[in-house]
Image (cartoon, rainbow, N blue to C red; front, side, top):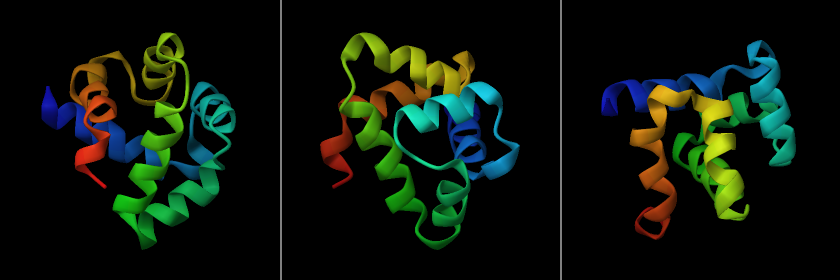
Length: 91
């Protein structure tokens, strides 16, 4: 599960223009451009990942899981959701 979650996490952040409609809507909700995110992933992967996680962390808890699902898919929630609760360890 962890490998699938991380794979989906990385793939979603690098899609750019090929992101799904729901991924684009979610990223725009987070005030993140899919194209800029994809470019940032090539330059500073950790920074880009933290940017997305920090934006998600700022949302009400009730909205976080739905947006995680829209971005990464339900099979990835188990692996990615804990990153939000342990974000301080990344900083």
